[in-house]
Length: 225
Length: 225
DNA sequence: CGTAGAGTTGATTGCGTTCAACTTCAGTGG
DNA sequence: CCACTGAAGTTGAACGCAATCAACTCTACG
Image 1 (cartoon, protein in one colour):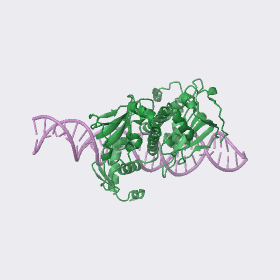
Image 2: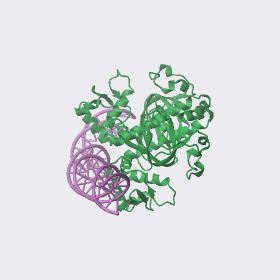
Image 3: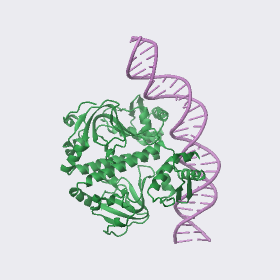
Image 4: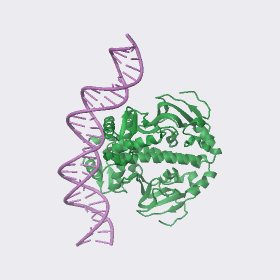
């Protein structure tokens, strides 16, 4: 892990407009910047909940394992995302967070958070909102998982990824492996591979390794092409 | 809906030991008792978040619909469960809550909750815990949905249902229709029907309409029988 | 008694899994 | 600089779980 600093880098951040970390209330929170490398863990499932994190730069994933099964990728994290809220549940993290690419991340210790809570009346509602949103995001994923077919889930994923990227940039640079992505989507790696090939042949997407761009007609009707 | 009262019925409640509503902090919350009938809605997806609920008696379900798809049952609620927390997300409910059997439910208005928040420092942490737990519950469901086969998901469901029931009682009285249950498990009604038949023939469960009892060897090995 | 909704059963189809072989790519050491 | 190695990704063939469609039975309720 990198050495902690205490600089406000939000001023330089391209996401500062929409980021919770740049919110008035959150800005007052005591926090440190960490710069973990690819493969590092922010926390592992079962560990005591002592901090949560706000991603400024980079990418990460959350996995959870249930008894006897291979782990399931729950979520991919991008800049502005808050990581580790699941720890509020019963005092320990119920998932494992791992860095996918070199990242810059704000770390907020639970201790500092609890202190701030007493002084800043606006903090609790903000946190309720964050937790509520996280909950809804996962229930959406749950709903999609059982309702939609693999292709549609993948397209939804792409659209979500694209929305977090400046519009002028041409396509998306995926930060996760096919294995992780397939796991996240709930299909086998082979299925994902075939799926991408099909969509590519149909002209819905253009693929070059981990670089994928959605073609102009982003709407659903392009499936029929 | 039934007429609101303001009586503390926790003293008479068989679940009072484990129920959040009976927690010191929650007890001080201003709340009213409602007694909705089967089919009533506590709230519908998209409505403004103005209250959450604590179930004392009865059963309910939460459904969500995403664009263009049939609704997905997210969760079934039993006594002690808190309903409507998703509303904290963006100020509106992201799911619909419907009563399945005649129920007695505490209603906590957001206004009263916000008021209490200012006076009771222990309330926010308790709420964080509730929200965190709800989040984790849904991510578990998500993980199971993609990892486990239908039969195992059904058995897990049964075990969960059973754990909320006094041990001396013989078996479980399901409060939901096959349709809802199949939807919740992410399979077709027909599949669920066949599944139940198989398990019954293998001697893993005993079925009589909506009354189901897990046979003595509750452990996984009984699948092999 | 008749109707509607809930649940069951059977036959068929298909999406996605699994297994296996192959290709591509990045990193490492000679 | 190139050969080697292992991981990541692709392709093909065969299988199987669960969906779908359709007909039927059961149950509740008027």
